[in-house]
Amino acid sequence: MFFNILQSKFNKGIQIVQKAVSSKSTLPILTGIYLQAVKNKGVRLVSNNLEIGIEYWVKAEVKEEGSIVLPANQLSNIVRELPSAEIILKVELEKQQANLKCLNSEFVLKGFQADEFPKLPEVKVEKNFKVKVSAFKKMLEEVKFSVSSDQTQPSLTGGLMLLEDNKTSMVTTNTYRLAYSWFKNDNTQDEEISFILPGVTLNELSNLLDGEEELELLIGDSYVCFNFNEIIFISRLIEGDFPNFREVLPGQYKSRVKVDRKELLKAARRVSLIARLNSNVISLKTTEEQLHIKPVDSEFGDAHEILEIEIEGNKEGQNIDIDAGYLIDVLNVLNDDVVLLEFISSINPLTVSKSTEDDYIYLIMPIRPGA
Image 1: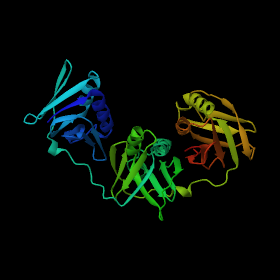
Image 2: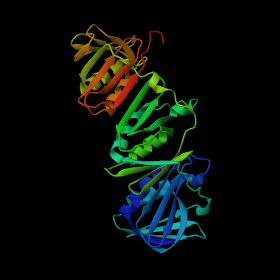
Image 3: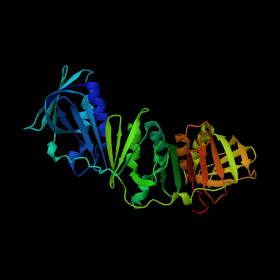
Image 4: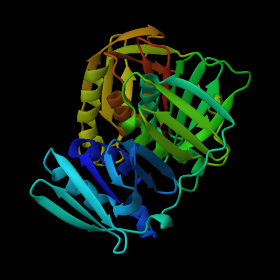
């Protein structure tokens, strides 16, 4: 195995596939990147942690075909620090080691046998459709932070993706909060398709998505394949039933508050400095023109923030106690200058939505006294 490759292209390819490299594994080979050199095509880079896998081709001058698995962290660190010039990589298959040369730098890396690296799963395509990369990325970023980390409820550790007629949506929840985002598209279909993507897929996929190209989804019974920007990203699907989220979506609100998002974020952060010393619970209370924010039952001090608001509907004071972190998380994600807070009562969820588009709902469940 012998090829020449530009440092910039090699580094870009490694950074892409490294997102699916296993950081901790009982199989050491999964901490590596599979390299396959093919004449007149380039070098194929593959990573696979058995939950997600990524394939990416890099242009290179291949003089001798072959394959090897090299440790991802060491390879990444070396290539990133090499000069912006051509890298010459030769592999001694008998020793399972690679020699890298770039100008006056030279490294030797021990690797693994390529035939021991697990192949990427074959996706037996049952459905496929295309969407805009930018719209899909925006949807992922608006919900991924709300995924549950509770492994006793596997279906909540991912996001429910719904493919409806001319609409793509995703929902995540940990039962204390819920994020629901959607966008319109040109795909037409007779029946709704739904599946659950792991939380790691939402995170790594959103990090890779970029530009205005199209994203192709190939959906199988156990895996889904995302094809975009010359990247093949394969993810397993989570088995199980996702809760019926539509049952908890609120109906008519009593009071709707328009408030400056950045000012609300700053105020919530400041009050949280006291609230997080105890339970991190804050109280939101409305008057006709103001929103009052205070920590709840803090033993370590007090704080009080007042924001100017516009209120619709019932202008009598609304009050709700919520987790400060849940409010801060969504305010960090949204880009609108003004957000909407919808109140029903102190025992019903608080709804956070956008003021400019009707494509997002975020619910925060109230915290009752003594809970």
